[in-house]
Length: 272
Image (cartoon, rainbow, N blue to C red; front, side, top):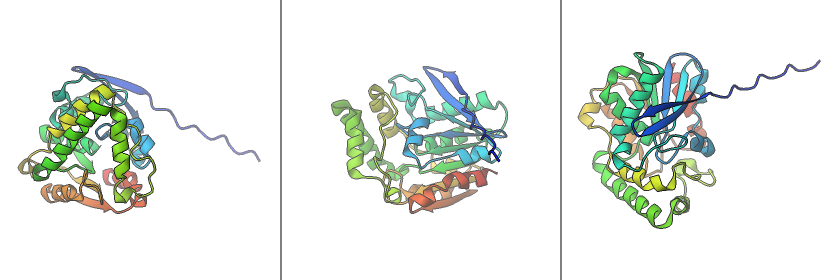
């Protein structure tokens, strides 16, 4: 008896949103209330796909319309070499504009990793009514701990200007992945930001921080915070501090790659 032909997975339709001095590229999958996802610095939708361990498709499969976009200057989005455009508060404004574009007037969920987590927090602080739930993934060092990270980001910007983006990738591969990512080869993959923009993005991150702790204490949103161990660039201590500050937050810390691969399902269950 012949097997029925399988139905191919539909290819998401690409979309763009014009912003001041940038055009944001995004796509949407699934149906239902909107959840929007913001990636990390020097990454993109395609870059995270190449990394192979951050998969948010379970969110779209669980009754949400998942909107994923490339931050300005990253991936298929455009941008200019102006540091102020890439600070975390400015990226929060881009996220709010995208929310107004894809779901005007409707509260939605927001997910973000690293720079994306900071983007989500700044957007939530500026317009808390736009969101119903938050998923914050591997937030970076913040507040008193930000100084060392700031100097590292500035050094990375200097390295790219002197020797090119490949030198930064090579340096990071020499250090190796965080202990929780043991077994991941060629980490990180080549970044997805045009080389002339990379120093600008890195210096904007160095000049940025998470919102003030006193403000974060006022956020009412249920939040899921996902972290991993063994990564000074994304220390579990920041995730723990956020979980203590935010009144409706829960925290999950992963110790190995197998557990990290459950994050998409964890986020989907939380948002459902």
